[in-house]
Image (cartoon, rainbow, N blue to C red):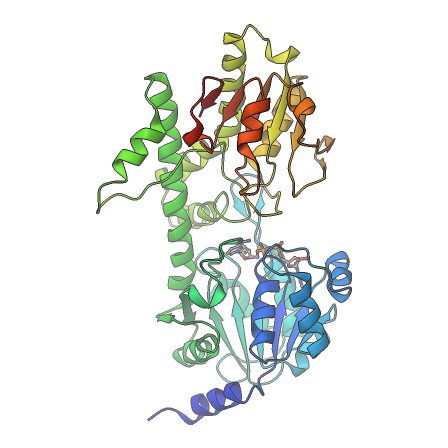
Length: 437
Ligand SMILES: NC(=O)c1ccc[n+]([C@@H]2O[C@H](COP(=O)([O-])OP(=O)(O)OC[C@H]3O[C@@H](n4cnc5c(N)ncnc54)[C@H](O)[C@@H]3O)[C@@H](O)[C@H]2O)c1
């Protein structure tokens, strides 16, 4: 028989009586808040960035996966309540934390955003509420860092509140897998917390998998992203090797991918960006060191992927040399500056590193990106060119760094003198003026 507390919680969920707070309205938090409000729940969206908060209140989106129309609907229904004050948590039954987890320096996790958010939550937590951390972090964060901070507010876990970790696994821009279709893993500090967390996600996610502890849930996410970084690092290295051996790595991958089992294709590129793959495995690397364990795979893969923008610049120099053009004297156009296609997100974008490296070498570099009209970042201060025939003709080489779907690649090909295609987007248009990574 189901425990009375669980059936009561499920019944309140069914009746939409449960009020939810999402802390941090970024790429993860805002789509989640929208999904919950669409399901009929009242959602308090807590955000400390004033600019983001103002934009939400103005019904203006800043996240590709959420449209301004969806925001308008949620706000006018009264089921999305954006707010900068944690006092509203006194009314929330479930609190979901989706704040950033960046790196400090090259290899150190920075959980200061989590700590700050949790301190504010602990001062305002409602009796009996459920707190769930979704930010990606190292194993141990939930029970070593968050639990003591929440209890420091005077509440006792298991009696006054319940705590879980459930990693977010969204893939921004991937319409095939909306939130509801991505299975969710959850681990509670206690079994009761886990059951409450599972009951909660069951209302919006098709499949929820409960694991034995927050640590298992935390490391599950890091395994997924370590798997990606290692395979991307491997294929990047093989691409560099194949180039030396004068073999087309893209043809090799396509051939290998015909094997119906035991192989999964990964593709080389100019580097890996975003707020996940480049840094998440390093959280694990750092934590493992506390146990005297040094992961060679994570370090190697991380070093390889972060060297790719530099490799692109070296290859560009060689490509131009063949045409008797010195890199320093060349005019270069970088096409695509976001870290990923079709997403308006510049975080850790390899294109930025490429532009930065070219500018440091005094190369005359411009960019084109339909999603980013201006690029004012680090030392870069550029405006996207217009993709016109007479503009393209001016450049000695066009570097395709991000393969946005909407671009007219046939037009780029027709009007450019030389193209360095780091994404193999022109694979069906093989042409002498196209050089692939
Ligand atoms: N972006 C992705 O594709 C993705 C996918 C899966 C998991 N994640 C993980 O989810 C977490 C969030 O990532 P994101 O991409 O949404 O980050 P983001 O920077 O887009 O959003 C985080 C938001 O939290 C806000 N914030 C910071 N401190 C706060 C506080 N104390 N109170 C209220 N709001 C606060 C920030 O202002 C920001 O708007 C990270 O741990 C990330 O690794 C991200």
